[in-house]
Image 1 (cartoon, rainbow, N blue to C red):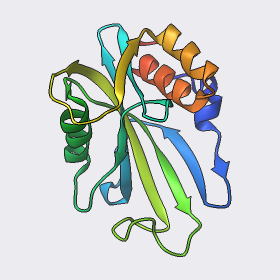
Image 2 (cartoon, helix red, strand yellow; image 1 turned 60 degrees about the horizontal axis):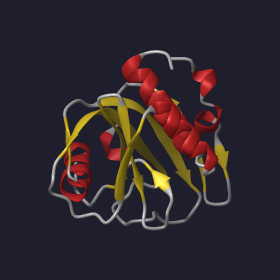
Image 3 (cartoon, rainbow, N blue to C red; image 1 turned 30 degrees about the horizontal axis):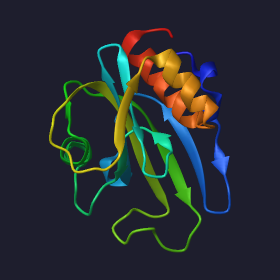
Length: 170
C-alpha cells in the first residue's frame, strides 16, 4: 500500500487533549486497548457513507460498550443500528491514542493509551435499522471529491486506503 497517498490520515496529531497516530496495518492489536471500532462499507462498486443528523459525512462506527468485544460491537453498530450485514471484513489499520487527561473518558476505557480500529469490507443492506442517520452510496472518485469538498480529508483518506486494500491501486 502506498502510504504517501494518505498524508492527512498518517499525520500524527498532538493537541491539548491527546496524541494520536494512525498505522496502516492488518496486524492484530491487543483487544484490551480498543475503545472504538469503525467500518468502511462497500457494496459492489459503491461505497456507503453516513450523513449524520448534523450534516457531517462519515463512515459507521463508534464506542464499544463496557465488556463488548470488537466483533460484537461492530455487529451492533452495523447490524442493529444501521441495517448493514457484513459479508467480508478486513482490518485497514488503527489509531493509537495517548490521552492527556488524568482519568479515562469512560471508567472502563484503558488509560492513558487506547486504540481505535478501522475495518473495511463488503456488506449488504437489510431493512432493519434503528439509526436516524441517512445512508448514501457513491463510487470512490465521487465520494473522495464529496468528502474533500466538505473538508472531511481524514475520511477521504480512509475511504481511499480502504479501496486500495480491497481493490488494489486507486
